[in-house]
Length: 114
Image (cartoon, rainbow, N blue to C red; front, side):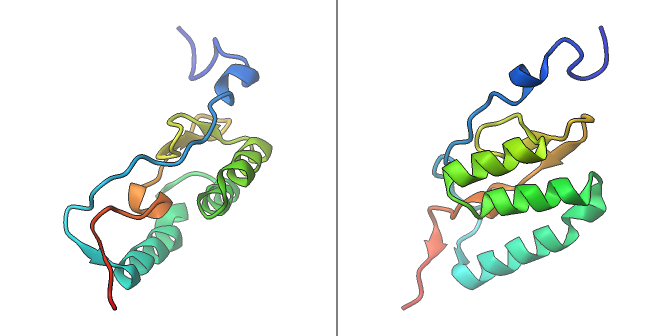
């Protein structure tokens, strides 16, 4: 055995292609403004949970980009996408970055206000 990724070369670790997250339902219906506030709070506090600020910034930029640009961002930043929907990523040193689904896409039970 070895440390994380010791048997994988860089090409194998970064080969996962990002895809749009599957539809999902939030535990309770939320409005668009509530979702925006939750996203703001997540990104505001994410760097305090460990990892490098540069990696958090790259993941944040990728989360708000279209799929092709997101792929280019994570590839250039050295982010290892463990789950193609970007809910679990690693940096090149093996630090884990967990991203909640509400940051990456809208839930199916989003309340539409008229």
